[in-house]
Image 1 (spheres, rainbow, N blue to C red):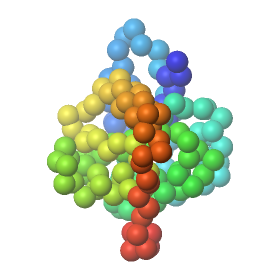
Image 2: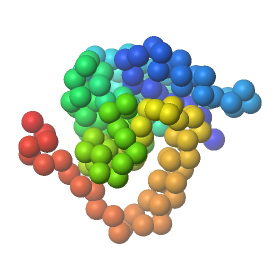
Image 3: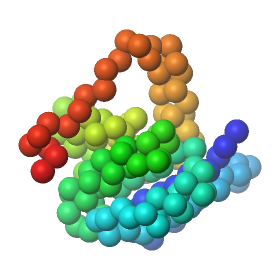
Image 4: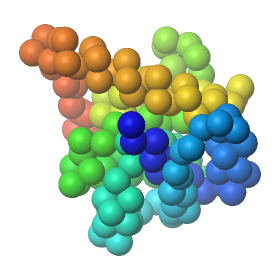
Length: 153
């Protein structure tokens, strides 16, 4: 099974935490991308060539909350749209009423997880597996919510 993960994150410390969360017996290939609030063709090509099973995306990449959402929108409109994206940010809480979490899901993330306590990498794979099982059994029952005009600007 593909155990490749692309992390779009601006903190080297957080990237290190992802690596530290790997079990010794687990072989997971990671691609870490340090980005500003843009997503360009070079990044898209690099991610596509790496072929990750999932993308983990931070929300605040340039100290702007909107940068992660912009990248999420671009990912969902790019050739990478079929790769599951999980938003992991300190600006997400475990509350069901968390507005950033709701917005990330509307924009196409399969999940939005709080960064603290720091999730183990297997948690991300478990979320993707669960999401794919649910999509396979209820694909025709779900309708994807689109961002409103206000959210697009």
